[in-house]
Image (cartoon, rainbow, N blue to C red; front, side, top):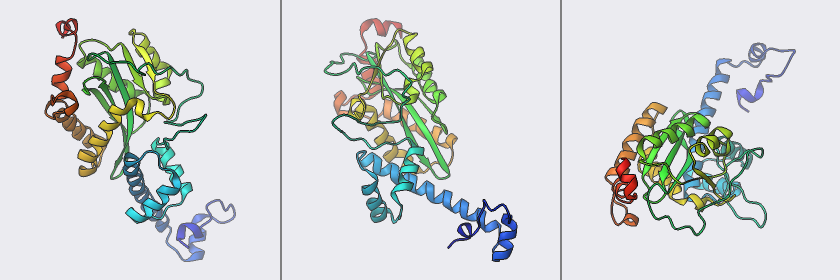
Length: 288
């Protein structure tokens, strides 16, 4: 039994100091154990995130097995559930009646998915956005990106250690500065950040139609899901950023290369930036 387990912090008759004296243990050791527990949680969260990118449909039973087999981490299902909730991750699966994605707010209005069987003909016709969890050496952050659906061009992005409205609106307002014309449709998942009154009013106030993925339908926003896989495996996991400012610098560098240097087979081997400039209607190009 560890020192932390031997000490009863809720004991009203004996203080923590007195219990440590009676047990013959050093009180500072209690805080060292807390620090060690935090470091262990960081490692577990990073492993969970890597496995989630590989297969977002895995449940806690399979995660227990893979964390033990591939990472040497012996974790119970209850702890995995608690950590995934903090990370904003949900198992993606299909059920006859009910399906789940990222956490939403039941009081917020949900909008229909407008892109089913729709042919996207040009840039700035549809934009999309999403948020992903970023594990770091000491803590975590969240990354939000806004992407043009047709050309995969990253229009704007923002990083923060909190997953709130400032994160999503920050990315959106950076995208405004890049786009020659606002999109006709904006697609997101049904997470609470994208169903909030502030976000909806921002879009509808500019005449943008709101589209939302079906519940459990991560494939409805597949292009930005692929972006997360690329930026994490090609940069974030390799570099192991230690702070939000370092992460922001690294992500900025990666997105610049992604947009301006990297050819995409789906874009006839053009870069996203070139495709974005070439695939806008003529009236859009005149505005730029």
